[in-house]
Image 1 (cartoon, rainbow, N blue to C red):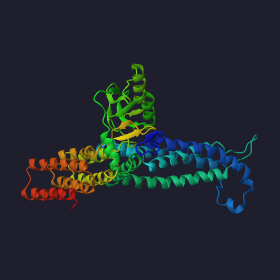
Image 2 (tube, rainbow, N blue to C red; image 1 turned 135 degrees about the horizontal axis):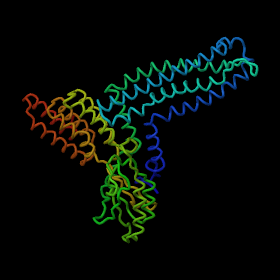
Image 3 (tube, rainbow, N blue to C red; image 1 turned 45 degrees about the horizontal axis):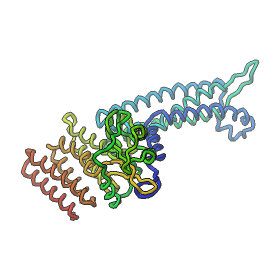
Image 4 (cartoon, helix red, strand yellow; image 1 turned 180 degrees about the horizontal axis):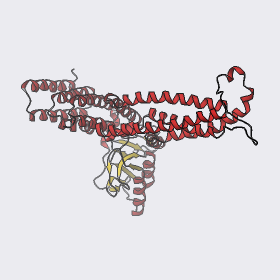
Length: 458
């Protein structure tokens, strides 16, 4: 089974499921610290055994660099490390939670996934918990001499605990500096832009005009068997391998109208199917096929960047709308967000947008997966900002500039119509506002430049 261009499918099948799982794990705070705790236990058990074997045979030059105190001193050091590191870890968790709250209230709740997937935060927490756990495990191996046992101070083990502590102190300093950088608007938008670009490169193919023509021609008949969503939530992923297999085995063509990021409600249609050869399957076959198809569409409680190419636009738009709210009233931040939105839209037009077709071994279309067109993406990135920023001339001017930049990059007449439609709406918005003559003239000049860009003139 192949995709539209004849190559074996990669994303959306096994690779797609792995991508969704990886994205889910990357947004969790526990996997990396948990791995660090496991490593700490292994080291805390293994290094004392190494000490017991090699401490007496170490050369004097090397021993001068190792911990040289007695058992009581070793216990004191390890106790101090353990107690201080758990306090620092609590502080780090608190700062992380405060940052998440700030990002949610100041910018957008949709940005929480971007913050929670920050690898630097994961590694810092892992370092602190590793040092704490290692100190506790190592502490049990320090023995004082008695009638039943000899004195034992694992020099390498205690020295390594000190090294981990120094690394933790350095990690705390770097974490504070990193946190101060991460809550800046410029950094937030840059991170969202980078993640959105990665999603585009992973999910979409390079623009193929012939493929787009074929996709537009693949319409479903008026009478179809509706496929209902089995779960409520947001469409997170569509397993292309499972959909194609279910369509081939059921003798049907499948059309999934909802695309990643769309809201699903259990029991309502998410698409439809129809016989490929005109012979309708039995009701039982329809039911089995519909169940398999619905199960191949994954739903979750929130949108993710795994397959949702419009998620980055949604995050950037939220930042701009939040900046334009009466409580914040920061059009400069909205203009900055529009710069990233324009850059992302210009990247999107270089990819194959619109429906994706999956074919069987005979080259027949068996699955149609709807995906956003440029018109949908433009509306997602512009409509709300145009509404809430209608009385800010700087925002309106940046919207015209955005359409000019996108208009220069589009390559099909359908995409040009989408840009012209947004230009018409923006002009109507400007006409409805009580702006000065100078501002209106400036905006009219920017609108004329959009038309020039659409005609290939800058």
